[in-house]
Length: 88
Image 1 (cartoon, rainbow, N blue to C red):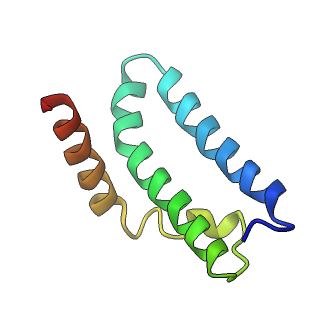
Image 2 (tube, rainbow, N blue to C red; image 1 turned 60 degrees about the horizontal axis):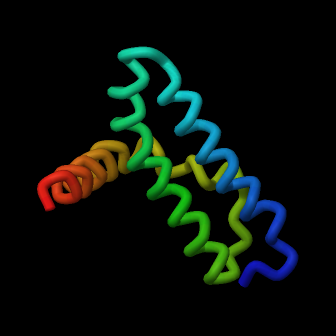
């Protein structure tokens, strides 16, 4: 699945980590923005790797294709996940 795709797979992970870090660095607003953006970014990263596993040849641009489309669903899912982690 990763044969000949290691470079783009690592780049996708670095892009997601970079965006999450840069958003989190911003004082006060960064915390809120991080909570809102991390869930959809992780979801798009998962979709990228699922497409890669299915041999659909995803591009780095396709990683952000569903960011706006499922923003609320991914945000709420991430928020519920964080609530359950904090409670238990």
